[in-house]
Length: 208
Figure 1 (cartoon, helix red, strand yellow):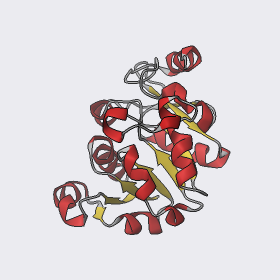
Figure 2: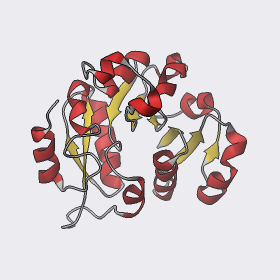
Figure 3: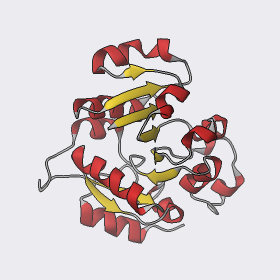
Figure 4: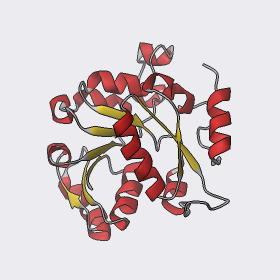
C-alpha cells in the first residue's frame, strides 16, 4: 500500500519503521521539511517529502502530529483519503480548545471537521510508541495486545483494522468517531496493553 505519514516523532517514526518493514511504500513528512528526515529515511528506506507529497498519491495517510497543527493542514488534499488519526489532545501543549476541554467533541471528530471529506479512523493513539515498535505478535498469540479502532466509514475502518492486524495487534471495533473519546487520555484503555476482551471492557467502562 502507498502510505503517507505526517509526523516523524515517537508514533510517526515508529509507524514509518514498522510499515516499511511490512513492505509498504511510505512517504514521511514533518513540519521541519524533508532535509530533517535523512536519518529516518536512510534507516527505513522510506521517502522524505512535503506534506503535499506525502498525501497526494497515498492510499492511506497517518496523522501523528500535535493536534494544534491540524487546522493548518491543506484540508482539500485529504478529500476522500483514509486518514488514520493517531493524535491526542493535551491542553498543556495544544492550548484551550473549548469543545475538547468540555468533551462535547471527541478529538477525532474535531479533526474530521477540519479535514472535510476525509475518511477518518482513530487508532494508534492509546499505545506507547516503544510497545508499538516491539510488541506486535502473530495472530492467536496469548500475549497479543489489542488496539481500539473507531470510525464512521465501514470500509475505511476495515482497511485500518487489517493494517493493525498485520502490525501484530488485535483490532477491536470501538464504534464511531463520536465514541472515540473512550480511547482518549484518562480512559481505562489509554496507555495500557490489554487483550481484546480487556479493550472491550475498558471501552465500556470509560466515563466522560
